[in-house]
Length: 98
Image (tube, rainbow, N blue to C red):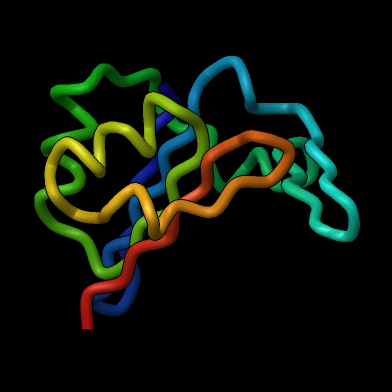
């Protein structure tokens, strides 16, 4: 998985994307998941489940794309399967701590 953490003005944004999805575009009717145009948002360091788990222990918002990335958040209890959106069968999850 790619893991990118951005910190600015007291906000911590965690972006996680399954490695094999980055650089691709997925379309489902009018909905588009453009991981080519927005690859800069997700492309950070290659990380395993442990690093992603640590990153998800402290965030203001998190964007996760792919079965592994989203599955990690579900296992951690940060979301339910029913909250996951899919575009062209690719799981996508946005989390916010208010």
